[in-house]
Image (cartoon, rainbow, N blue to C red; front, side, top):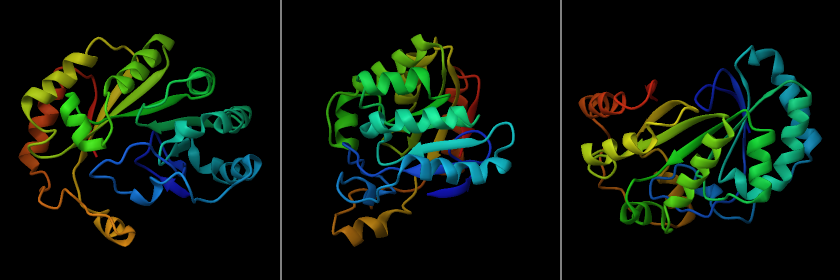
Length: 237
């Protein structure tokens, strides 16, 4: 849990991190949330009461964000949770990698998620496999298409790794793919960092991007300038 989150959706957020993810992104800063085992079980009403205690701080924009891990792995359980939040007038948001689009996730997204933040990993299949360890980047694009067709709000998130996801060709491909989308309110550029290395080491896993460097200010501004050709709001986090 995290209270007073300011980088996981609009306004001040109460953030619930769920255990389990089918991807193993090389830059993941929460690798301890990848394994589907572990975590702590909470009753839905317990989480609702936590959110209600935070509600006075939400204002008009804030609310609850569910992150992970990958929240849509637990879409069936999130439906009654989000339903209760909506009954209490609380804004709901899901931070997702878009790998799961089934009956339960569609119901959750269509009926109860005011916003989703979709993580775009890479624009080529080879790059996607290298970064995530899984094939088929189109699954995330299918979820984006579904969200667009629903007419409900969406943000994109994109980790900018020098020479890996930062080339002009890839950034233009990203922009061109989504330029016609009307539900995308903004795209957030996530500068690459190594803050999660110690977690990888604690798990006994090898961190394979040790040689990758952090972005220069010029690289961040260049990426922002390119993406502004396609998106109405580009933010560097």
